Image 1 (tube, one colour):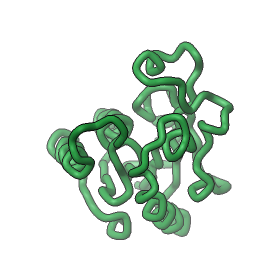
Image 2 (cartoon, rainbow, N blue to C red):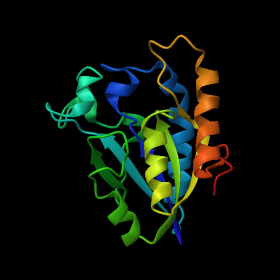
Image 3 (cartoon, helix red, strand yellow):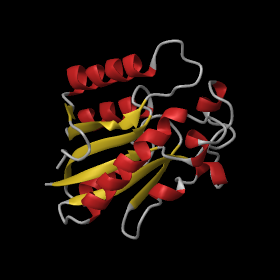
Length: 183
């Protein structure tokens, strides 16, 4: 059984673009380190789950246009660009599994465990974790390599992050560990 590092929505629009999240800057280095570690092992694969919206997507009823398919905003930030051999899965919904090929690709690579990192712990990471749980995959989440969406929230980020992580452990059995400890 292999492990997939699934990097969720580390895109230009979510880091410093139309839906910029200042908290994202702190998770870039831990994700980069974990991706390098994963790429050095035959037991791991690296997968990117990236918003690639179309103008009629339902999510655009809730959020302004962001990460539109083919735009610069929908590209992975330079520091985390996919490497040859990485899987890149465009998505139009919160979960990386909804109407994508991610489940098929992971099965083809004999993946039985996912390590989730990126944005947003309380939204896209959470919905991706649900689908991973539903598919019977083991789940791990790196608290130092995930973050909730910061702008517009009245509650401190740390409290929202802790609540999101507690949800993932309580309902999906996610194992938590610092990015350098996962493996």
